[in-house]
Length: 440
Ligand SMILES: [Zn+2]
Image (cartoon, rainbow, N blue to C red; front, top):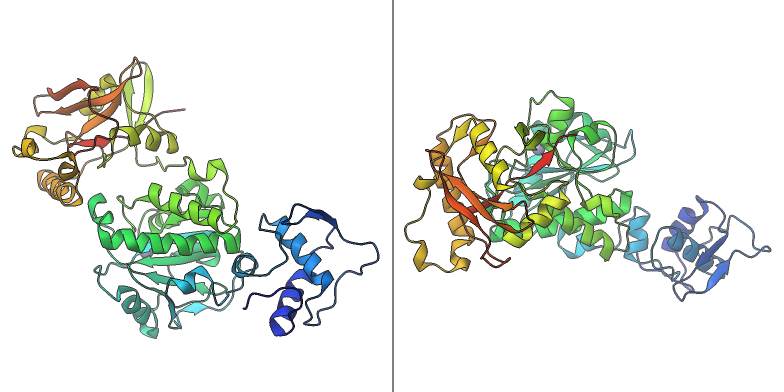
């Protein structure tokens, strides 16, 4: 679709008029110039679908845009076409290199309105042309699976139209759009933070934002309960597995997928496209179904099984808040350590060479990845529900100060007493964020 405005004629104008007349008769609206406008009593409704963009088509276009929070200038460009579910030559996905190879693995059409975007990992290496490889794999009939989009660091491939039902996440397919990402569900947080993933997720978030605007999907992360309850938003394949398949099936994009940053980027994209983001979209709802209950101070706390690594002191409180959580107090950190069913000895993880390093080095992606490997080696494949001893906590002292605390030795002795003399920007390999939330 081309950008069209008053004075234009042709098939795209007719297509646009057909969209307008499917809606209600415009009444009153405010145009981009701030003028109060209204549909004149002597103007018939519906307008004629005649391929001629005149005064009434322009007025109806302004009203249509105003009703959707778009710039009500009567010019039908990529954002307006996008909001109407139409692709444009200059749509953001196209400018980021959208390519097309059709998959036969799909049902034509939709049984339900699109309301969910499902994030997947391809379980393929982060390589150049990874998206194309995945799309070509989906294009083979014998694959018996597909997704709408495949994204890597430099390209985006589409293999099923949004209007059709791809085969990617079982029970939610009827109302979901699937986006595949190069990489693996087992990736560590540091691996999700490498250059390739960062570029890929920015590309994916721009695409997801466009889809959110096109289908009116709120840019929020859905927990399993919300997905099952029929809410709209973004989720992982794992959420469909937990919600509809008793947890049996795919668990991508994995526990370390950076949902917080991804959803925030999607929300930014939605705003940039003129869409609406409400405060509750980007706050909460974190899925606590696998969290462990810890009794402390006369209350029951829900505790995340492990830490979010590589978090700055100043970032931690905001991250916790956005997840509907708080920072633990030092006493709660001790209680969590005691309750943990797998304890790593912090002394084995301390880096003897740290005095030579700057903070930038101590929090670099390579050091965080290396530390994650050291922790994995200590875990040694053992199962756990609550893991402790892997990080110092960003903790909140009862008097309100935020600092670092903990990192217990096997003896139960914390290496770090409460310490609040680092700058808020301080971040190193040894600290993490343990999300906790008071139950009820
Ligand atoms: Zn998947």
